Length: 156
Length: 130
View (cartoon, each protein chain N blue to C red):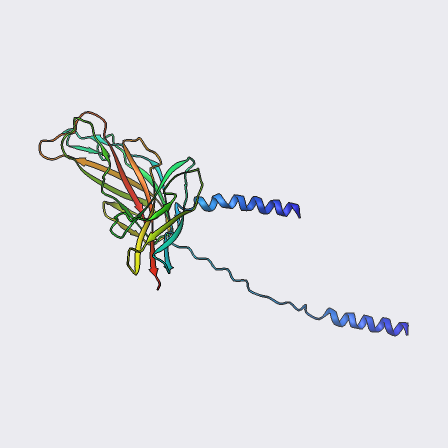
C-alpha cells in the first residue's frame, strides 16, 4: 500500500510538472487630458536709449536691449502684446509720443518680430524678446529725464 | 507601514509645488452651465518665480472691456512657486450665454525703465439654463 501511495504521488507530481501555470491578465486604462496652458516667466526687463536725432526712444537703438521672457506652452494658445497705455515721462516732455511694442520668438516656435497676435499650435519652449519704441514726429524731441513704459505680453 | 505612510506624504508634498510651477493659470479653457443669473469659475494662478510676486485677477469680455465680476481675491501676494484658488463669479447680464476672459496679471520686476506685464488669460463660456 505504501509503495502504491508513493508511486501514485510521484506519477501525479510528474504529470503536474508539465502543466503550464494558468494566469489571467487585465488591462488598467489610464486617461489624461491636457487643456491649453501657458507659462510666461520674465527674465529681464528692457532698456530704451535715445537716437542721435532725439526722435526715437527705443530698445532697438544702440545701447538698448529687449526684455526677455520664457514662454512654455502646450500649444493651442495665442501670443500678443497690448498697446502701451502706462507711461511715465519727464515734466519737460510735453509733446506726444507714439509707442510701438513688438515681440519676436526663438526656440520651438520662430516668430519674426511683429506687433500682431500669433497663434501657437504646437508645444514647446521659446525665448521671447519684447521691444518697445517711442517716436516723436515733426520737430518734437525727447527731453532730459526718466521715461518708463509697461508692455503687456499676453498668452491666452 | 509607518514608513510607507511617511513616504506617501513626502511624495505628495514634493509633487504639489511641481504641479503648481508648471503653469501660470489653470484651467485656461472652460464651459459652465448655470441655473442662476451668474456662473462661477475657479482658477488657480501660479507663481513660477523664486520670489514673491503681486498678482491681479481681471475679467474682460471678448473685446477686452472690463466685466463687473466678483473676484475673490482680486489682488494678492503669491509666494515663490506657489499657487492658490481664486473664485470668479460672472453675471450673465440678462444674456443666455456669456464669453469672458479671466486674466492673471503680474509685473514681477517693477521699477525698471521698460517693464513687462505678463498676462495669462483663460477663455470661459457660461451657459444659462432655464
